[in-house]
Image (cartoon, rainbow, N blue to C red; front, side, top):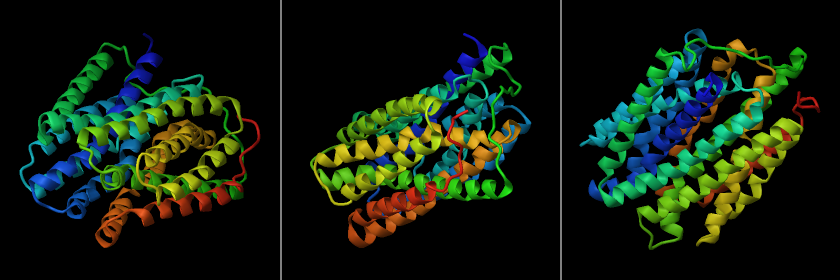
Length: 388
């Protein structure tokens, strides 16, 4: 294996683990709700600071990776996530669980501003590499729900946190060893990447549109991922944690595979066209999710996740086209402070909407309106026709 292959491998594993840890609590909470006799809307608020830190941590960790080492920063992520997850499993009070979840969110914030530039700056076919990496992200989201549900049902919710935490620490130590023996570069490295030239006004317009789009996509993603276990419990009924985890796993496994297809398309076709189609097609999906019950709901969730995931390589390439490589960590940090910084807003919306309506119709209507609104703005994105 060469350095590039190892980089893609560990970046992909990191992508899977980060999303897996970020998704655990949304299934485990259903068991804690019963064991601790605390309402769902109160428990979901415990993730508020963790969700916020996934966004806020992106810029400082992105800066650290630019100035120091992306591979070194990734070792901090693996080991840190593992320790935080174990602490979650050892929690015996609301306050300690809140602290542990917040710490988990902080270490999860490392991945995207570090792992994505790590991949982009080590690949010749960037869209393909991002697509492969994206598959693992979908696997992480899907397996997070399934693994958490399965371990909770077969053992207990504490074990569902502790075992994956131990695995993450081991992976981090393996990465440390590979860096030590020079199988993975300790120093950051770059490749030739043709950037598009834009005027100052065009750059300001691109920045505004991309910031708006990334925030809306991040909020809709969090709204869906966070609420889905409870939505399935309410609208499908008579299902346990394993079944809920399995259905969510299917949704995000499929969407992850679609990310690879989206990456291949991003290498060949107009980035702007791919981006706007993927965003607009989420509008009717969320509109349907707002009102549909039963297993038809799962189909619509699969479609929404597919359209959301398929444009991620395109979005990352759009950012790389007008950003100097030495600042990629900071720029992707800004992206993910928006994408994941919307997490607390999502937790607030879910908690308030559920406490008032005991349902999530308005939540998905908000998603639908955002997708329609952003689609209009993307039309004015001044990206050149050829993807070079």
